Image (cartoon, rainbow, N blue to C red):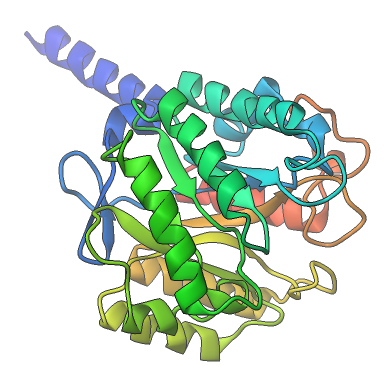
Amino acid sequence: MKRLSIAIIFLISITRVVAQPVKIHGQLKVEGTQLVDQNNQPVVLNGMSFGWSCFHPRFYTASAVRWLYKDWKCSVVRAALGVEPEKGYLKDSATQKKLIKTVVDQAIIDGIYVIIDWHSHNINQKEANEFFKEMATTYGKYPNIIYELFNEPDYETWPEVKKYSTELITTIRAIDSNNVILVGSPHWDQDVNLPAEDPIAGFKNLMYSLHFYAGTHKQILRDKADAAIAKGLPIFVSESAGMQATGNGPIDYDEWNKWIKWMDARKLSWITWSVSDKDETCSVLNKSASDFGNWKTDDLKESGIKTRELLRSKAGKK
């Protein structure tokens, strides 16, 4: 009997180590301002965003997704579909969709969550509608999926963003009635106070994106987000990092740690930008990094080393 008990404990411990996030949490939903799992327990997702698919396609590989899950301990990754730039979705939809689907397909295999991000600063209603209709048709049955409708509205007003988002939500919900949808807000996802005053009604499982770069965005933005949450707005930090909003400059560790503590206290999910090798502080990889993961310390920039440490600490790994 004692041996049997020891064996059961061992099997449970092994299961916990190898268990995939989606197997643990299942279908996500939004209750009040909190993201919760299939057992109505609060869930916090932590992970990485790939860089623009049109600028950094070489990292959009199944092996890179697997490495981010296995080594970096990401419970979520974000596939950032470049829309307007040269070689982006508007110019070459077939290539860009293939890149996104590679990431999504592997995330489903690995049992992690994945954000399908329309990575644009402008309204492209017709094209976005067609894209999300296809994504919902292809992937809506999987609980892994989170849709991000509008990466960062810049100068659009909230009424414009609300109208755009409502149409896309209607399209998705006609096919996929459950998976979480992230809605952007004006001024690069800073003005969450605007949807807090006038949220989208009539749909469930909506959250609103907040983006921050700790070297630029400080207590004022945290206060704004707290006020929005107090009014009932569910927030998901779908892009963040420790340096200036330009993506460059030194990492402000003091402010970044304040943000991490702030998100932890509110049980907010967060994603760090980005899996790319651009010559900038926020790109976590050096040029030496392989397309296929298996990155060594020398392949990581300072932001990559720090982010990996953070993600592994959230997963209880050193």
